[in-house]
Length: 542
Image (cartoon, rainbow, N blue to C red):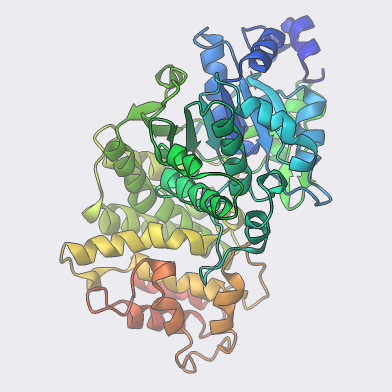
């Protein structure tokens, strides 16, 4: 059986026997409604979107709470060899349907077809400017959401200069924009010129103050265009009026790893065709999404043109402070710091999966120390979620789930962008509250291990591939002269890294933090010989 609309309509018995839930609504009618009156468009057509955001819309459609679907925007850079591969390989062959496999900790798999993606468009202004414009100038449009990863909001390099694509964008007319932030700004300019209808620009990415980052980038680009005469000051007033254009904060949490070959084979065994895993660039993709069952999304209630009844899809709607506290609880204490620690040590110690690491007593103890001991002392309680219950579920149910094949290598991507929030904010809270940082072990060990990881040598002394990171080249400049098995020749190589507030949110040598030397010592031990990372862990984590 192929996964497409025709099969859904004419072979319902197959899906019932295979225990696969299918949409209760008429997909063709939803597509028609969406084309007439679009309400929701989403930038970033990857797995977290398909497995969580589109699934939330699917729930609302099944319950007759909404009657329009989501329009997805593929944000792969136009001009690359694989720029349309997401559309041509993941969406079109399956009529924009997704098979969501939600995997419980006991191994049970809930299988569901998601039919809420009414259309997909590439964020390529050369071919699709008018199509995107038509959607954005619709008065019915309520929500523009994003899952483009944290680096998607960055428009400048480390020196504060516009990156090359943005530099080109701000010097050209908006219709020629290529960067995602520029594209979003250009579409808002069209909305402004064609009625100035209200809209919510909703970042659902896993980063701190995501809505503020989205707003900052869009407004900055817009101001450059106003300077060059591509628009008037009224456009900036429109963007900065929250009753017209809002940028709600959100906190999202759902582990959505790369598609698993195991799940692929299970789906094909029950008779579904085309469920194989394939590559798009460096990413594994498939017609299905495998994800953990646990999921959390908290959104600030700031929607000037109305919104879907998100609460009916299990989404928390709250005030700004509650969203900030929920995000801070997760990102600085209850999940993300633990994930990053496992990612770094997992790569160094050659683990393939996170759940395998959790079977190692020392690594499990490490994340317990970072979470329960070091982070919980300054954890924020958002009230709608209980930090102790949350972290208990993470450690005892989620990270140990052998059916979620998440890899250290995937999580180690862009670590330099994550560390200031995942560890720096905790260290800032220690300093602010006058807490003694000398008792910290797990956090400084992890920071030392990260720098050790940047050497590209695993604990056995073999070359190791490093996950992509926008600061990798800059960071490796400082450690290129450090030699493996020469721990006494560090010189001042680590100081530019450990004192960098951009990376850690604090100067680790600051007297209120006072961890710089401690981290240097841990690092020295970790490069002293083969298997030194393992020995160092076992020496300090007991």
